[in-house]
Image 1 (tube, helix red, strand yellow):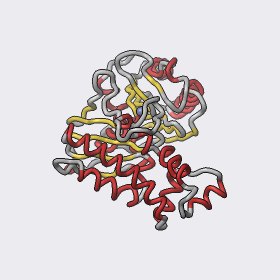
Image 2: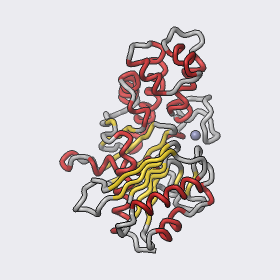
Image 3: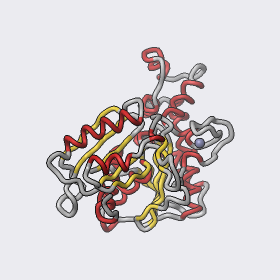
Image 4: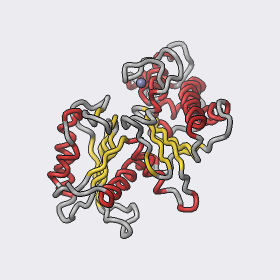
Length: 313
Ligand SMILES: [Zn+2]
């Protein structure tokens, strides 16, 4: 069973164990993430019980949109949805599903697993860095297909790499990548600087009162110079972070996914330029193949690992 808990949406799916089903789901559901961790978990348990009623659950994989600490509690912490700190997700799933083992990873790592297993066998890269640019900015390292989580489980917290002094980050720090490149940060930058700019985004503001990163991408795709500049600044900083990862890890590829990565050339061109400019050697940079589905696909891979590598509780 695969679960993808996001800040705005939560998805879940069940699949037969491999080799019968190679990533094909038997059933799949999605719901808007409720306001607290407790409500989200209760909704999840109700739906998963219904979905799994006719199946024995062998393993559960969870992609969590937040920090997953491996060293000490609280193991789960979301900057968007409060209340996960006091919950024991693993124990509650084990109780609900006959002791089935659960593996939890942050959404960056889950997406990296999803991208890794969906690469064509001949084109698989052994050492991967993954950057997710979405409501937040995160990441993961896969070394020979296995996650490198670090001493605290906080390796590859790409969103909190200092990139430019100033901007306030949701973590409380300043100047971090997430303060400039997350979807909300891009929207905020556009809103703050729109007043004196010539841009079609004025129409969106008049209509709706605020902007999203998607609005800015749409405007940029129609040739709006202001929107192109705003997206380009975010792309440049993500490219710099990618160059830094290239220098530190020299991976076979860096995959960039998440909602913001669905943006067009206005984001990607400056990203590639910055990544090349700051690098000693070119690192292959690829857009995520599965788009928004990579975390759920990765959660299924975590479920497979849980079923085959962990003892039942
Ligand atoms: Zn930060």
